[in-house]
Image 1 (cartoon, rainbow, N blue to C red):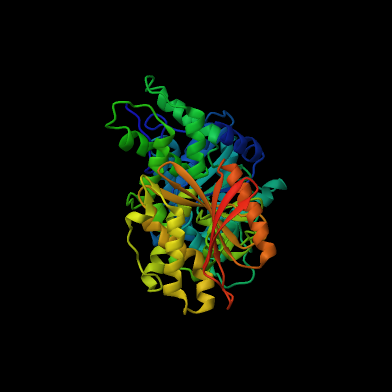
Image 2 (cartoon, rainbow, N blue to C red):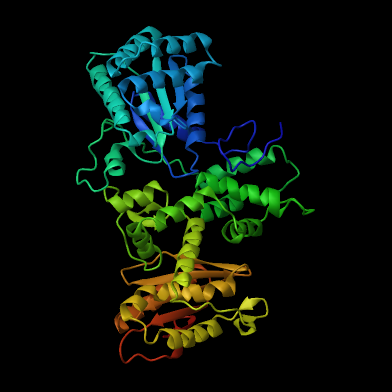
Length: 525
């Protein structure tokens, strides 16, 4: 069977090129399952949870003293959650249908037991008898538990499993050796989803669960294994694996779906009609442009946009991180941090919240720019030939034109609004100029000064520009030092500075600053 890079549904090794995650899966088995822990596998939409479960299941099945029961709650109707009887009967019927093709004897056992279910007591008794009779360590995996987590009956079911777990540890009962629940929402904080206004948010029947301290993101060196998998069937193709993998990680932060998606775009769109089938770094850049600007309608992006637009507090939180460069502590007991983490919009970096990856960052930029454009506060501009010098952009001219644009359109706008939106207004101005041939990244901000450092890539050339609100000469000098440091990172000798001054005696001016061995073109507006 011919294989391909997969961006839909479950990844299967004999059908798709895949990353080798055996090290992570073995760690999960050795650190959690072998110790009989109950835990959750969590991830945002299209993170690869189902594929992770498949890979973990393959490891469990190889162990002679283990027995695996794997099922999913996806597509289950509401009738199952009417009461204890319907849930208990429905749960065993699911196990019956899941095992019918693999083990007819076991399936029949589940079917007969389902007919005898009355309540959770009878289900508990069946689990006790079943696990004692098997004389193996039985691992139960339930995928797609999110819909069930809205049901009080499901929470009672978890409470039953918790009670049996505690009794097992005191040798008073027999039950599953390990239970694994997979979904988007953490069952330990399920009260948050059921009753978001409650103060006590962690009172969950899944409070026995152990934390899964295994990072399921792909590392750059792991992405190499996917490329090796591809090259095993395409030996005549040359790929600089280390450099390509690092660049893929640079854009995706190892988000599994995005890694596969970019590889798929490179193979099936970028090099498909090219005589030379080798992969280059520029192909990764082009794949990024396609996935960000190519008009892709993806469930993953749609989900992020929906969550941001339906929750004003979440939108403000992400706006403050992305546009205002505010530091936000990564504390998942905070409701908004938890929600942003749950939907994979943010990740933890040095105990601070950071937008998960550069692809999400760019798509969220576009969402916020479109909202601003539709608000009536921003007047769309159209590209002029003067914005360009040959194949490059003329950033000095762009900044001076923006200075004039800002003066004409925002001189009499409410100060609080304009101070909050100033950076986004500039991005809105810049977007149509570079769109299609370039893109903008927000770089990490060093220190406590409220500013934004942007790296602009256009036609394979890079520019660094600092956006800051004037806070006085002292902070200004600190910003020059930081801008100089960023220029050193990119081996650049010229940088750009856009200063928003909201003082009454402000001046609209420009200045060329000689700082160390750098030339900094600065514009005040």
